[in-house]
Structure formats: structure tokens, C-alpha cells
Length: 351
Image (cartoon, rainbow, N blue to C red; front, top):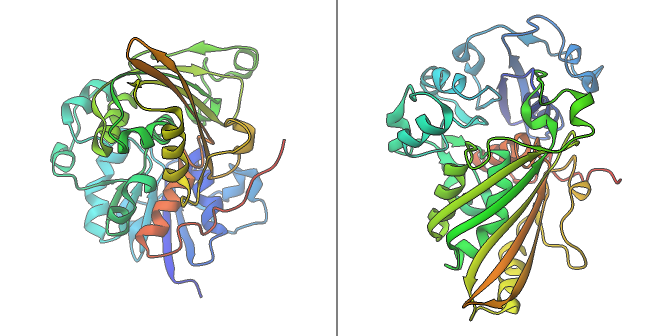
């Protein structure tokens, strides 16, 4: 018999699909119910065809409180702004919660209003830090003791992992320029002009330049890790991929810091991390992590110029797994006192 019981709320989207898949494979956590406002009464395979004959569960049209009843943990695959409205009922249930939306990642209600386009319905939960930010590579011990975790965004995870060693070493400050290339699944299951295949498959285009909602999340995280007065200039780019993010980040460090020191910082920062790899013979690439919870990180240090060095930092992730639901499962494992690698160690396919 499995030790813990879990529910997924918002299980009909791409993030929900990955949560469900990982939970069905989990040796210690039983997926008991999946709540959704769509496809009520239909089998999960009606939306997620990869689950055909894999489970008898059906989508249930129940309230968050009903979904959480008797559960050890609830995982939310709800959209931004929706998740925040459901949280009081979930918190009253007594269950632990992992939220994949952006509704509880920030500490500043004003930043939430600016980047998410509306007042937060429960700003007090932001200012008092009710939710632990769920980046295990930075906050593992806090996650272990948390009742409520806000899992990071996909771009945020990728950029933060690329820059975290510099921030922890106190070398990250001032302007940081980033180009982040992302696959179409990051836009969600509902089709739109930006994700329509005939346009997306043959195209590259930017969107929300310098205004993406993950900007304050990344700054908040990197400054909490040791970065100073960071000014983030982030340009996201839509690419003809279903899955994957590739971030290229340019940081400016003191010329006295050698390339060898920077490379050592990266190697040491991730040497014991179960899901972050620093390839020895190549730089990161999306195909190496697609379909997995792994991230690949790399770094290249430029020559000295005007008292500074430019450091190009790279990171590749799967936006739905390490950038989304997989990291949510990793956080769940930590919160329940389990090995954080459970149901997440598959290496994916190649090519």
C-alpha cells in the first residue's frame, strides 16, 4: 500500500498531464482524484491519450475542498489568477499544497499587479511569505519543512539555474541580459495565434520583450541567493519546438575573476545536485533534457575588457518537467520526506 495520497486540481492541461503521469508512476504516492472544470466524468485518457488503459481515474467536477479531503498533498495545475482564488479553501483543508501557477511566487503585491495585470486577492500571503519558493537547488531545506510551495516558472527555473552559481558567490550584480527560447507547450493547451502549428513550425518571434512576468521572480530569487541590485533585461523568443527552453544569459563580472574560478564555481555548485548536469565535453542542448526533469548548465568566460569580463551562461530544460510539473513532483517528494528523485529519474529519449 502506498504511503501518501495526492490529488491534482486542474488536470486537463499540459502541466496537469505531466503531474498525473509522474504520480501514476510514483512508488510511494497514490493519485486518488483529478479535479477539473472540463471533461467532467470522462476518463483521463479522453484528454491525455498516453494514459489509455493506464488508469481508471476520471475527471471530477468537485470543489478544491472536496478534492483535498483526506489528501496528504494537493498539486495545482491551475492558471494564474485562478489558483489564488482557490487557496483559502485549500489551506483550510489541512493538506500540503504545491502550486504550479505564478500566484504565490512573488513577495511584492505591487510587482504581482504590474506583471500579472491585476490586484492579488490575498496580498497578505505574499508579504508574510506563506509559500516557500520551490527551487530545490536554492531552498531544499525550507521546502522540506514547508506546507505550501510555489513552484517556479519555466523561464525562471532555466535562467535561475544558469546564474545561480554566480549569485551565490557574490559575483552577480547590475545588468544581466538574457535571451530565452521556448517551445509552444509553454503557452498551454488552448490553441492561439502564437501556437498555431503552420505559423509556429517555420518561425521565430519575440513576445513580451523586457516585460515578461518571470522577470521579478528571477530578480527576487537571484538577489535572495546573493546577487546585488540586479537589472534584468529579458527577451523571450517563441521557437518551433513542442518542449524545451534554452536560455543564454550575459553577466558582467570583475576582470580579476579568472575563467578557471568561474568554471570551478559551476562544477562545485551542481556536483551533488541530482537533476542539474554540467556537461564536460559540450555545452547544454535541449534534446539532451527534453522529456526529463534534468537541466543542463554551461558557462563560457570572455576576455577582460574595460575592467570587466562577460560571462555567457547557458541552461536547457524541458519547460513542462523541470520547468513545471516535474519540479512540482520534486518539491512534493521533499515535503513528504521522500527521496526527491522518485518518479523523476528517467533519462528521456534521444534524438
